[in-house]
Image 1 (cartoon, rainbow, N blue to C red):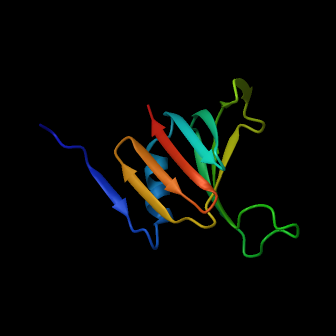
Image 2: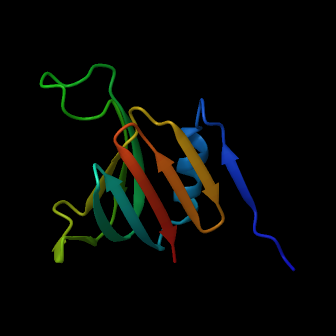
Length: 123
């Protein structure tokens, strides 16, 4: 019986590099992203073309927006509360401020931040 490779990244200092490496290896794949935040759940389906890791030294003036974020570029849709809509800019942003944990497996990643949990599966 073949066991799948699975590793859990340190809870105290999750490696952004390991997360981005996993995502880069899934370029041209379809990603199924489940975001749970404040008892609300969104589903995103995205054909990953490329990704960027953005880091800003200063928070925005209004305090909105993350200083560290992953931008997943590609066409896709957001499914929330029974409605489906295209991604507004052919990109999906995952804020990494307050990243508490990251679990990296062969076919999925689970990211836990102060705001919520993202489960990303590749097909």
